[in-house]
Amino acid sequence: MLALGIDENGLGPRLGPLVVTSIAARVDARGARAISRRARGKLALRLGDSKDLVSFGKADLGEAWARAIPMALGYAHATPQALLATLALDEKATLEAPCPDATHRAQCWTHAKRFEADDTLVNLIANDLACLEKRGIRVVGAKSVIVCNDTLNRAAALGTSRFRVDLGAMERLLLAARKEFGEEVDAVCGKVGGFDRYPAHFSHLSGYLYTTLEEGRAASTYRIAGLGRVSWVRDADASNLLVGMASLVGKWVREALMGNIVRFYQGHLGDLTPASGYHDPVTSRFIDATAATRKRLRIAPSCFEREAARKETLSASRG
Image 1 (cartoon, one colour):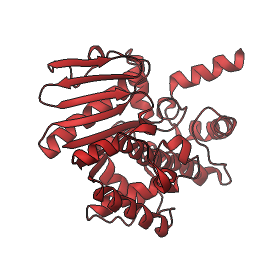
Image 2: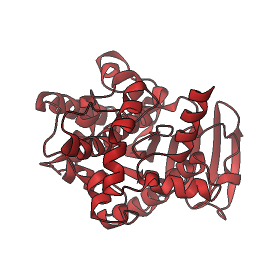
Image 3: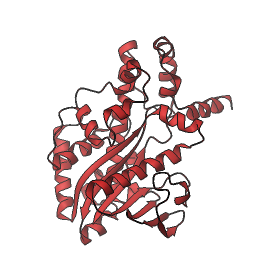
């Protein structure tokens, strides 16, 4: 069967994009049982919830998975830009379409020229993939939906929450896999927000016939006509191998794109401390330090910081 694991990275930061990633694998009966269990032994040191395995500025493990998966499929990438182009579900022109001008494009799409992960680690992950294949799990694809802050801010202005945008990205990945591989899927996705009943929130899947198999806090599962079986599971990145893999790849994609923003402003300001983009003091200082430069370059506020996150931060500081 064609199994999918889908997870998000960057749902709640102040800076940087929302990234939603899917990993596709062909699995036999033995592999189907294996992917639904937590990684064990030495593999557990390299596969699982990205929040436990990698941290800001130390995304080498995520990069290694992101590089090793295409390598296993016969594609080698010389630069991060080339790898991101392969992983992204959307074409470059589509990703850059919200950018008002070349300066805005440079802010978000000035890619690093070289990888950070050691080749030894990449080869170790390649060996992990080979071992998983022997266990009946052959990874056949990885894709990411990248949602920039301007798109998130525009959606929020129309009353669409980031949780609905996250779910919509997952729907796109489900439909893309169905189209690419030409067969129904068996998918596990990380839970979105506090949703228990998903069909009412569908966008791309609205209008599809479905049967509810389970709905609750721990898991919500549906059989969707023409698509397959889809589950949204709490803490899925820690309990499903493919979701954990998606979490790690997505972590690197988001860090690479956040790195673009940091490098852009370092190019204008020189010694500027890198920021994660999340709600932390370093990110707050990064935002303050770049304010004058952003004003001079006429960077649209909606292309830099998430409006909802900015309001939350202001409210917290006043409280």
